[in-house]
Length: 409
Image (cartoon, rainbow, N blue to C red; front, side, top):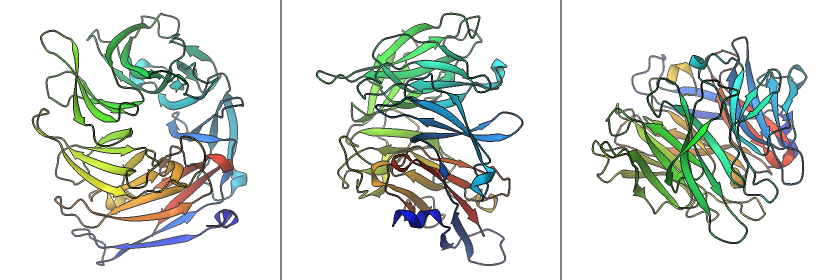
C-alpha cells in the first residue's frame, strides 16, 4: 500500500454469520473506516486513560539518539485532525514503555506508573516511576543500575492490606549473558516519599507477565513470557516454604512476547492469548493456551496465526507485537472475541475474526486492514466516542503517525 493512500479513508467490509444474535438478518456487516492520522514523534506504545472527566490517549515516544517523552492526545477519535490536541506530559523518563493508572483504592488521581528502559545503548538505565499526568512530576522508585522494565502489576504480596508493585527486569549487555528476574516492590506508608523495598522472587522472567490465582490456592501466581529465555513459564509460591518456584509450560514457542488472560472460545474458562516475536515468518505466531484444571498437566496449545513476515529492515526486527482480544461492537459482546494484533516488524495491523461460535473450533479469518511502511507499536482499543463501536488506535513508529480505525455498521 502506498504511504500517501493512508491519508485518506478506506473501507474494509467484513460479513459474517453469528448464530443466536437477534439482528433481523443472518448476515451482519461491519465497516472499518481509517481516519486521517495524528502526527506525533516516534509513537511507541498507546494506552487509554480515564481521568474522571474525559478519556485521553497516552503515547510513549522513544528513540536511540533523541529525547524520550510521554504525550497526551485528546479527541483522538475525532474525524478532523484539527479537533485533536497533543500535549507533552514529560520528557524526564528514559525510554518509557508501559503506562498504567494507579489503582483507584490508592486515591492518587491522575497518577500512573511508567516502566522504562531498553537494551538500546545509552537507554539501558530504566526505572519504575510514578508520574502525575497533570503536573508532569516524576517520582522514581527503583534505582538499580543498568536494567530495564516493561510492565507493572499491583498485588498485595505480603498480605498487609497495601497493594505492592510486581515487575520484571533485565540487563542485556553487548557482550555476555542476559540477566533477568521477577521482583516485587513493597509499598511504603508514604506512597510518594517512602522507600519501596525490593524483594527478589525468581530468575528468568524478563519483559512481560500476567498475574492471577491460577492454581486456586488463594495467592497470586504469574505467567511469564520469557523473551530471552524463549519460553512460557508458571511462577508460583510454595505454600509451605513460601519460596517462589518456576515450571515450564512451553519452551518451543520461540521468543515469547506478550500475553493476556481471556476466554477466547466462550466455554466459560480462562485461556491465555500469547504472541512471540520472531524474524522467521514460519516461526512468528499468535497462540492460545487452554489452562488445565491441574496446572501441572500439559497445557493444550492452539496456533491462531502464523506465517507473519517481517518486512521492516534493521537489526533485531521481528514480528508480531501484542495481541488484544475485543468485541468490535456491543451487539457482539456475547460472541467470541475478535483479536487485533500489532504487527510490529510486519508493518501491519492484523485482525482475526472467529470463523464460528463452536467452542471446539479455534480457527479464524485473518485480514490486514492497515498496512504501513513502519514498525507498528502497541495498539489500543477504545470506544472514546461512546457509540457502541470500537476504535483501534495504531502507532506507526517510523513515519511518526497514529491511525484510528473505527468500526461501523
